[in-house]
Image (cartoon, rainbow, N blue to C red; front, side, top):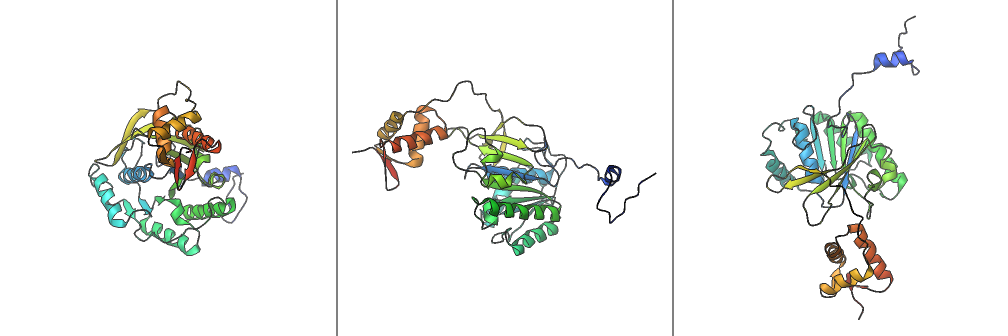
Length: 325
């Protein structure tokens, strides 16, 4: 006996579900980076290069180009909602990137020029973004950065869960994929990816993919990308390098394997770092000096400063660290 699905039925057999199943839509960005109607979180510390990378990705998506090194099967309509740069400056940045791409993205890349001041956490703000997405017929919506779209406490799991529900409502109502730029927690370990994002316990419930952007060495301009996917196979980390003249990133090869354990930094290294620079430095200056002298990681330098401070071997005074008199 054949089964005929009732339009109003809430319980369906597997045969009926398979009959209603729409054709599978390929990922918008391969390999598994951005599923159709998925949510990709891109995170990293401030000023690491997240927004430049996302602008590269937006132009590549709009043009259907693999220029960023990620396969993009076809062009998509992309709506950018960005909150950090004044519009003329943002357009100048896009215009510079466009020189190497031509006009392929011109009619598929759209910008919400009135995004600033609208909050996803408020019903009228959510409606603004939904209206903009519908006007753009957007297949991809970029929110850069997330903290500018809400007024919630990012350390409050319940508040972040409510914000994530707003993201889901925007995705479901617009039927678009979301690329969300977000900051990470301080002092994350090398092996953290999705859990490195602020409000991570809530974000883990809604994200399909996570891309963590880090700078492996303060002496080099390269970026390291690390990935975590919910539905796709794991991907190894990769390195990118920025061309400052075109503002495009390109592949710098695989991440070198670490063959030697990290060097332990002693409190005497902290004192010597201070003494070598006149005995008085701000926190970031002291951390960079320790990293350069010992070739250690940022995390290791931070721990060494904390330990030396707790032991009274260095003193903090008016925002600067100094040696005891």
